[in-house]
Amino acid sequence: MKKWLVVLIIIGAMLYIGNKWIKTTEITIESEKFPKNFDGLKIVQISDLHDATFGENQKKLVNKVKDAKPDIIFITGDLIDSNRYDLENSLDMVKQIVSVAPIYYVTGNHEIATNEVDHIKTALSELGVTVLSNEEQVIEKDGERIHIIGIEDPLNGVSVSDALINFDKTDDFTLVLSHRPETFQDYVVSGLDVVFSGHAHGGQFRIPGLGGLVAPGQGWLPKYTAGVYEEKETKMIVSRGLGNSVIPVRIFNTPEIIVVTLHSLEE
Image (cartoon, rainbow, N blue to C red; front, side, top):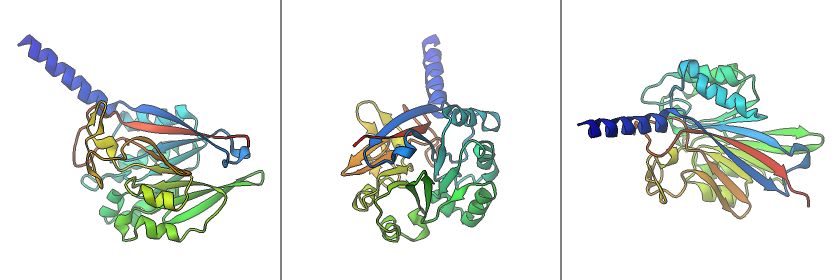
């Protein structure tokens, strides 16, 4: 009986750590195309919070973001969960980090599924967040520019490929927020430089040596679940995200924020 108790305690501890512990994943990207005046730009990516709570008033999550000392923060969708919609809970986190660095946001499928997407966007905009709905912004530093593009989740009725058609080709470095990793080929065809994505929840249950087990939009044994994927000049960063939705637990799949540092290579 004592052995079973020990086993249950171990399982319980694993489930707690696997769902409430936040890992900071650091990624470095180097490119000859990346402008020298932006060298060392640090971006924190937050994805798929799904109304989850990390500590009282989201303090664990907030402190992780602050500790990273980002220059920019990207939120790549599913800040809320359509099954247990609690916008104020997720806005609590945003209120505490909006002064840390400029925040850019795109929708995920869950925002659109609530039918409250306009209210969500307005609430974020009023806090000072830049909401990108198939839009782009250009940031400039000492004569050099970076384009930040935000792709609305295709649940709104516009596919990723159709949304990307509306953006003019540019020689400037492009950073893209787009919730869906399964449309990787659309990003490659468009010649985008770095895409920040989520949605896959890391495959929910990660099997050592194999990867994620299942992901929305990709089904069983999904291809794009975590880390960096590269084809031609396009790199896609897929966050395992923070919260859960239909499947309430993660296994071997710790919630994460991603910290990306971009460097310019000398030509």
